[in-house]
Image (tube, rainbow, N blue to C red):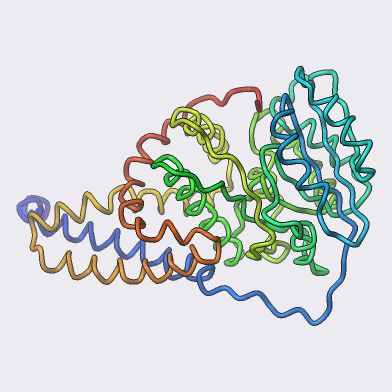
Length: 377
């Protein structure tokens, strides 16, 4: 009987499991993440500026708009552009703040929504109104709590467009602050960007982030906006990109001028709620995307427990040698990617943060079955 024989050699089975997980992780490092680490954008021989509409949706965001909206209004961009703020049923001073800014910045346009959209929870209705109001073909999306990292943000994001480009994925970073929570938030943001940008380079785009995202109105209308997932509170960014992206219509932007910066959550529970809203939409991704993301999460979840078990009960030499090789390759790829995304200060902690992902997946796996909140604020 083969099964009793295998069971008597469970130590070997654990080692084989560790090796299998190692192979899976090496596959993702080499096939996906290395693309981003060693990515060099093509040198453009000609440059053109496109008319751009920047859209921000806001609900009770007077404080954030007062702090961040000027960063959009003072952008140095020589071509035609407009800034649309959709005020979605705010009860604070958002309306009066926008009216005051409108007097000084003629490129600011205000859309006032005074009624809730029935059967369309979340941000999708105000964003759809903003896109339909936009005068220009290229729309550039960000949030009220975001500010461009430079005054050349619009120029950098639109500069990536080529004739066949319909979607541009940008990096939405978080402000660097003291404390462990800030490190965890920025690590998760970096790790997520490393995935969705490297997948895009492999021609398997599965998401973008609404903090820094651009696409053409034509693709929005071609896919009938968010109609295929209007009933889901989230997904105005990732589900739409998951549906609309093809192998050839997506570009990424790693120019530091193209980054946006957001205020990180001030407590772990606030961050957890934010991530719950995001992960509640991942169940609606295309089957291939769900498989690849699930396999990667599975390999991260079991990798270190399998390594520890194999080291203790099999033979410490072989697992340690294999782990050393893996960590060297991982260090090279992570260091280059962190440098590209402006997160170099995270590198000294990358091993500890990689171990943290074991706990991260356990904590946030609840979001896959938890019903999302119907509101976007």
